[in-house]
Length: 510
Image 1: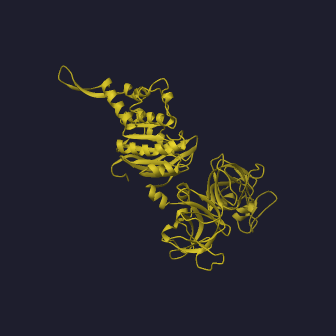
Image 2: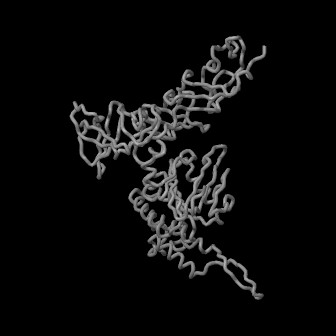
Image 3: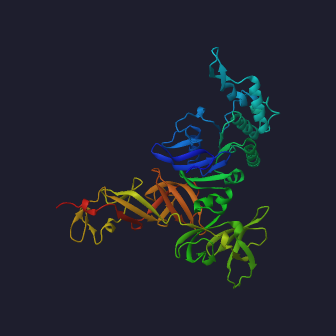
């Protein structure tokens, strides 16, 4: 259902490149005048989504509506949309004025004329020099470059060039301005300044901004609405405050701000246990349900205690301390588990502190992934299971109780019936901690690239993507880096199989 006053609506939009789905069934409504940020890591589909709104890419499925009208197949130049790219693509042989005026000089606008017979008609004409001057002057004033209209592009700073690119985009008075990581080429100080300036420009213009970035700070600083994306899918849509304070899952919590994320169990009504301690909470889940808990560092309350403290608060030892200007950041150890905390109070490394967390600051979420499930797996002629086009040794006798493998490789049941499982479709399941990772590429059965890492307090949860675009989720005690290529080793006894369909169809006739 579309929002009221909706200007852009993406309805079941998907985009497939060479058989790989990069945007997967996206539904999103954007209100007129809103500043919306598409946020996510590289490869999550945010730029492709932006390019489909601009008309540079056509959706494989779904449709895009502008003010309620289908523009899915409308070419870019017929859409009231302008785009600012990370590389500004300014013309080096033109000065600031001519760069901004370039599109206006090509533009034709409709005017009403009356012919000799008194009939009113619509004709298209170029803008006059006076009209172009007025529009360029307004655009340069908005971006604070009105004194530099005669300057060569090569003499401008990165921030000034970025303003010229924005002026060139807004001078055509688009209904929507698309910005694809336009601050990526600037240094940190200039980027922070431009974040505030872009927000101010948005207020002055009053038009819809759709902004793409992987920088959470940019998203939190500028946006009315943040759309968090992962592997082509929208994870959560909300205000910066909602996204930060009420993340829908561990991925969003990890991507927006610093987070402590832990495996936890609901042990009673509004009670959750993690780090070996039971806390009161405000989220109601079933007793004994496994959940993820997110604690923001600023919500960890610390108080110095003696080492022989015997109170009911959880205690930890400070092992690291960093001064951040407005607060200290501490790394605490609770047994073998780590927790990051922020406080304006100063403690010393080695201090023992008690820890308290307000119930409202304990964010509890349904556990996203408890095991790897591959519903499209199959058995090959060697009785191996094939996942992501790679064979893995497995125990196919689990598909039939009291069975064994004969000398010919057939599965034999207790009554002597034989089954040829070559090409049999199965569901394969592998637990998250059953996959061993190695940087030795000869160790495992399959290789992949690490595409995301989430620290869970006492371990890392790593997502590895193979060349066949299959994902493996792994819980590991060891730290890795994104884009590392790793080898994965899976023991045959750790692969659980379920046959799809009736085993009778694989029976070998005697």
